[in-house]
Image 1 (cartoon, protein in one colour):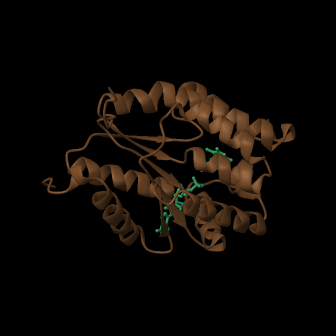
Image 2 (image 1 turned 60 degrees about the horizontal axis):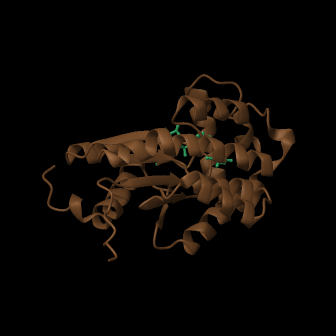
Length: 227
Ligand SMILES: Nc1ncnc2c1ncn2[C@@H]1O[C@H](COP(=O)(O)OP(=O)(O)OP(=O)(O)O)[C@@H](O)[C@H]1O
Ligand SMILES: Cc1cn([C@H]2C[C@H](O)[C@@H](COP(=O)(O)O)O2)c(=O)[nH]c1=O
């Protein structure tokens, strides 16, 4: 007899989008909103989230794999993701802790696939291997003009006291960032059941509210919970 699949006890939410659109800021704000509703959640990011995946992050973002090409980098991102899924995402979801990740598999499809030219069949295969069934329940795609996002990134660098503006992906030409933006929008329309696009060209507070409207209406368990 076929059994009805049981929903896992917690939700997995990812944030995606280009550089500087406000993903990290909104991941933090969403976790605070969830905590106010009595929901325990963990904040994580990609590449990264575990010691091994963070080591791969440093290696790639320092530019040490650049010469290997986008295909090899897609494999490295997937290797980091596999560890992240096995060591952090899966175990937290299983014990009932929500997971909110700053980037996940759509970044590989947008950066290495649609923008970097890696063919779909490699991206698809890596996704199956690395996710091991752990697809996000909801993906918020933050969308904005990359020129405005770049101004934010520069401001952040000044605030952080950095002379260099960002890592190697942040140094690409504006046309490249426009292609990336359209890549994320294409991914969102191909996965409309999972992805919601929200304009990031609004204040942090207004954006937080717009995201909360989506999250709270998507998951029935949040409705009617006392703040
Ligand atoms: N809605 C907003 N309006 C104006 N500035 C913002 C907004 N959201 C975030 N910022 C500022 O823009 C900068 C980038 O924000 P944040 O780090 O959250 O973006 P990100 O998408 O995570 O960036 P990256 O892709 O580089 O990791 C920060 O200095 C942040 O304070
Ligand atoms: C997961 C993932 C990330 N990238 C790129 C995107 C960004 O340029 C950096 C991560 O830096 P952030 O400040 O944490 O956003 O890595 C990628 O190219 N492919 C991926 O799969």
